[in-house]
Amino acid sequence: MTSLGILSSPGIGLDGTIYCGADDGKLYAVSPAGSNLWIFPTLPVVEDSPAIGRDGTIYFGSGAGGFFAVSPKGALKWSFMTPGGGPGSAAVGLDGTLYFGSFSGGFYAMRGKGNVRWTFPTGGNGFSAPAIGRDGTIYFGSVDHYVYALRGKGTPRWRFPTENFIVASPAIGADGTIYIGSYDKKLYALDRHGREKWAFTTGDYIISSAIVGEDGTIYVGSYDHVMYAINPDGTKRWEFATEGPIVATPALAADGTLYVGSDDRNLYALNAETGELRWIFPAGNVVHSSPVIAKNGNIYVGVGRRIYGIEGSAGLARSPWPMYRQNPQHTGRAPGIDHLAPRLSNIGSK
Image (cartoon, rainbow, N blue to C red; front, side):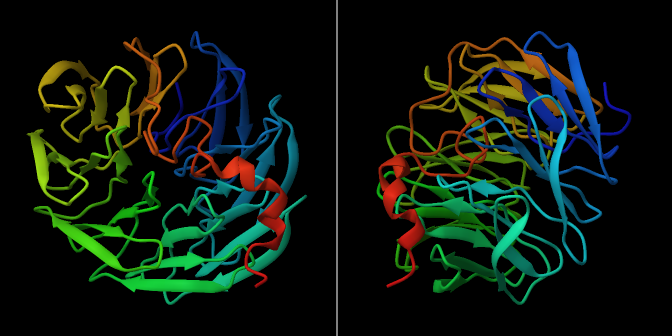
């Protein structure tokens, strides 16, 4: 149990350890059985989700402006202060570069022990958590209403205008399509050149990030209380109504179960193909934390001041983007990027 609420989505280390931040300014490490392993205290409020590197290092930011790298045993490796506060969730490049935005209006690329490689300014003082495409392009949204695409050295490829703030993180489909929601109530599908393929309108803000199923179906929740399944051509497949706004990002299991939390204090398990209800877990508080699925199918989610472990039916779906930040380590990196490792340092130099 934490001393204040949890908005952060838990991340799972390669050894199964669950890492989660809380509003009490601490990062918690918990065993798969629910035992508290260690607590790392930082500056107030850890709302964004931790990312976990290939060596097990946990990267996360605090609302007061600190960005931290912590070892799997809970020891500080290094820290970095962003001016103006609020570094968000990081994406982890295959070469170890960390990409994240902050409330200072700067987007950072960082290497090594907190060494800034480059920064990119936008017209807003906040960013969505970034996603890295198969070619190394970095995508993110901003409160200045734009979706940005940057090359690996921080040079812009394109930007796409929406009609309001963007806080949702991008999801990337198998063909490279970028799916991202906006406060303008629309989910956008953009091609790799920043051209709109279609826009799907919901009844209210989209804060939840989208995910993508094995057959290309896109799933996204809206503040209008509805969970949507959208066909790859932008038409609605089905919708499921809850009794509260949906802020959390859903997660998709390999057996076709879709898990989604709602402000109505429930975690729902739905049939991803039809939208039919399979079961409800009464969480007792609003579910803003996005659920994560472990290899054995267990679901972990933060609710109120607790991290819950819930028995699931299957491991994570083998789809292009099955959960928040793509995988349980929250790297925000599209699968298939590994073959680009020798080229990553050269992306953007042409």
